Amino acid sequence: MTRPAPTAERASFGMRRPVGVPEPAEPAPEVLPADTLVDLAQARRDAGIDEVLGALDRELVGLAPVKTRLAEIAALLLVDRTRARFGVATPAPTLHMCFTGNPGTGKTTVALRLADLLHRLGYLRRGHLVAVTRDDLVGQYVGHTAPKTKDVIKRAMGGVLFIDEAYYLYKVENERDYGGEAIEILLQVMENNRDDLVVVLAGYADRMDTFFAANPGMQSRIAHHITFPDYTVGELAQISELMADGLGYRFSAEAREVLGRYLRARVGQPWFANARSVRNAVERARLRQARRLLERPDPRVDLAALTTLEAPDLLASRVFRGEPDGATITGGS
Image (tube, rainbow, N blue to C red; front, top):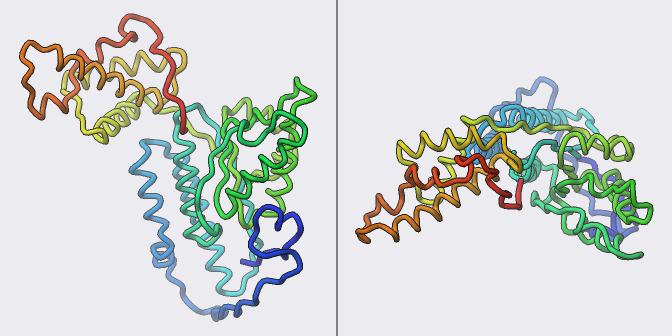
């Protein structure tokens, strides 16, 4: 991939070579003859694309449209890289993205796998993820925002910068808000450093639409808009089972039936946040199970008792009393 010459802006964000000092020349790769046959399946295996997408399948239930789009992006980048071996000039792609959807739909996990994928394909140096919110970028007084934003960008260079609830960067009702300064710096870096940094903006779809309407420069730099659908009740049940299994628990047959009733009621309540709410429900079931075991007339337990969540551990939820089930655990989309 051809990299643009170093500039003052690039050096200031932690790039690898000072202004005016050229990068050492690399030997030009041998151009393949036009009649050479390249095995794309082998190239796909060598790049580890299936490994990354397989990990995504294991980690996240459902989200078929999201996984399809990620597979398409991977295929395009692999084909571009193969075309370059034949000497076909392909400009470096713009890979900045916008993830829209409700909380708990896997946006952060997908961003993490995206970083790994782009690193394996040679589009990112390091392939790490730096996840931030407005508070990490915007200062509280004059002169505070620029150094905060630049420090975050420096840490993210070579990987993916994930900005959750990105619309909070822009507060139209506050003329003295410093979010605009952070946006200007981001716009500059997204354009000048797009070969070494991928920015992913995330949040609710309607609020992101408002944000882009007020910041057309940001909209023009986003190449991929990916919508994360809510999970179905069946998918939420699968997520519950996976989460419980990861903690060394299982649901009894009766508890599994109650879980389905719980989920059907919970999705219509306030503060529902997909997988986050499921995680919260599993944690509360564990708390109730522990109390139930300690309050049994017979204090002796075996492994099955210690690792099985029973119907009463779920039936004690406020959902079955027609009450909201409370706020969800925060952190991670």
